[in-house]
Length: 209
Image 1 (cartoon, rainbow, N blue to C red):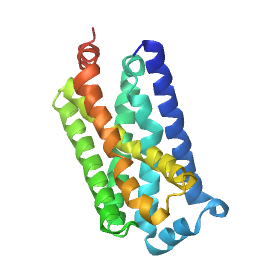
Image 2 (image 1 turned 90 degrees about the vertical axis):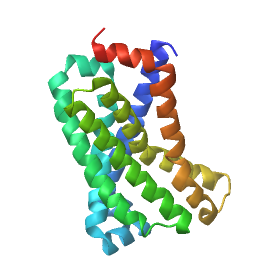
Image 3 (image 1 turned 90 degrees about the horizontal axis):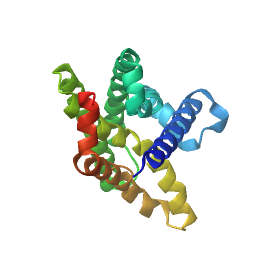
């Protein structure tokens, strides 16, 4: 993939992330645009809902910028502080997401899918944080790419739901599947990106070459 296409793909990813982050915040502060489903979540589990939406919005708004190599090099100190904020967002969103997964729609399959998403999101982020604390820059970058791939599940989820509705697939059929395909392909792509096509370039960037 050429540098132009990589830049365009990164820009699209950031714009989609910012849009969903803004939408999550709007759901929390703008009652008129809320669905009855979100109203029910806020009524039944207000703390978990606020933490999940707020944490996800923070991680989405920050994460994409953290992955750009030029921004990392040019604004290293900003990158470190934004990284701390990203980890905080994942901690809030992931822990709350784990609690909310126990009551998710989609039956056992849906609940298990969202629970594993939350656990994987927390785990990859924690591993990335521990790697940079240990000075393992290449490993840190790889784990944080995996982490943001899982953060981006908030975007792919909101693409698959209307797509399934447009195809006429009943919600009760589509949602348990979406609980898995919203994040598993993202993680597989991140794994291919870090271990395959981009591995040499990641190592060069990490070494400052």
